[in-house]
Amino acid sequence: MSILIVGGTVADGSKRPGYQADVLLDKNKIVKIGRIERDESMEIIDAAGLVVAPGFIDTHSHSDLQVLMEPEVLPKVMQGITTEVLGQDGISMAPLPAACISSWRKNLAGLDGDTDKINWNYKDTQGYLKMIEEVKPGLNECYLVPHGNIRMEAMGLENRLPNKEEIEKMCRITRREMEAGAIGLSTGLIYMPCAYSRSEEIIEICKVVAEYDGIFVIHQRSEADTILDSMEEVIRIGRESGVKIHYSHFKVCGRKNWGKISQVLELLEKAKAEGIQVSFDQYPYVAGSTMLGVILPPWVHDGGTDKVLERLSDRELRKKMVYDIEHGIPGWDNFVDFAGLDQIFVTSVKTGKNQDAVGLSLTDLGRLRGKDPYDAAFDLLYEEENAVGMVDFYGTEEHVQLFMKRPEMNACTDGLLGGKPHPRVYGAFPRILGKYVREDRALTLEEAVYKMTKKPAETFLIHKRGEIREGYYADICIFNPDTVIDKGTFTDPVQFPEGIEYVIINGKIAVHKGKHTGKRSGTVLRKKGKEVME
Image (cartoon, rainbow, N blue to C red; front, side, top):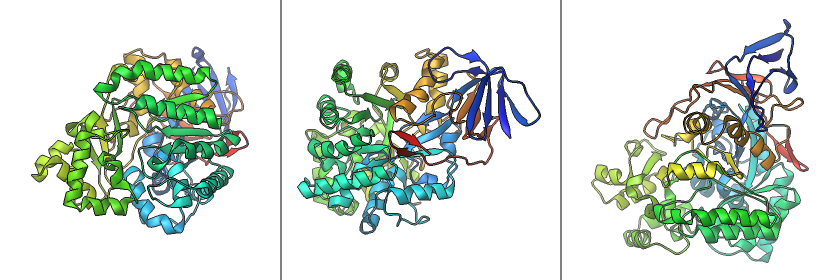
């Protein structure tokens, strides 16, 4: 049955002013836009007073394991997201050689969780994407091949530089995974083993990605004290490899670094003037979220999670950890320094033993345990085998809006889905429409929709999505511009937003009058040639 959306205001993703039109969907495509006569074969959606937009595209997602466990991925679909990009921060599911499964699951757990309920012997991107297809995902899924996984397959988890043969092996692995449909490469230069690499290694891998017109998505080496040097490194990678650059969750962390923002923006302009394609994504909050293990100095992570646990059990090494955190290490993004123990909060743990820690700051955790906050945090990481999530507060609303208005920006969630998550998991996109469009007027509605739809589709070369246009795929979000808003808070984040009335994915209604229908009509989108297609 075809679907006819009538009476709505179409914000088509192109930034043109919204206009009144009906939209006809047939099978998985948009077939007509304009004045359309109804007939009895059509399912009618009355969109009077509502905005009809393309489905939102989340370019930084951590549903990598969740999509296999709960394929509806409700936190995303219920906020209007119809496509998401997995494989972020250089640490994800594939490739995964059999010999590395145990150690890698521990390394991955803080970001994406862990489970014994799947078969971890899928080996590579082809095997992983096939698993997603088999569970019939609730939304469309794209995948970036992660630098850390590539490095692990080529040379293990040791803290050392690769030799020539190992770099060549990394390039071969990258080519194999791009041929399997990966849309680009990700790295996270604060995460192990990615942090062990130098620019030259990444440049060689990115040359392969550039051959496929893929994108390089990077959690840069610093978002704080050395952010200017970090950005110069990223620009160099783009310059020397020819790859397109996309900064993950763009921001400047810590009060003492806010004065660098003008220079940060100058570097974006410098890169564009050189002809380097540069973009970034952003979540609309003044707090971030990652795994608690990042508070540990880099040397603690040498050799992987098993070595982390050994070092955490050593009282003398703990003293060195505290010294390094208190005094800093050149080039290391020190989360305790720029956020503070009282502004880092535990969001998830693996076991029942430490559930009482969830929602507490590290300062409060120390009080609860009757310990120094450092020891309380170290004990928690040890007992949970490093599988602990966190939220950290780093910025201001003024800075959020400044970056949001930049032409390079598109929206994302960057949400970890376990425990008591960051509220962006459930509300990033509605928050932009409610707070930053309707309340603060930082963006027009059309600009915001563009940054959620066409802009990310163009940046990641996602074929025939991100626009309401005849012949494009029928990914649609219909929302009420007067009521749309996120509902989750940092103390009570697990709340679906208001005002997202309908979500249609590949022509099937996933959300009807604000309620999930149970339908899963997503697909895996693979890179074929220069475009990302089914």
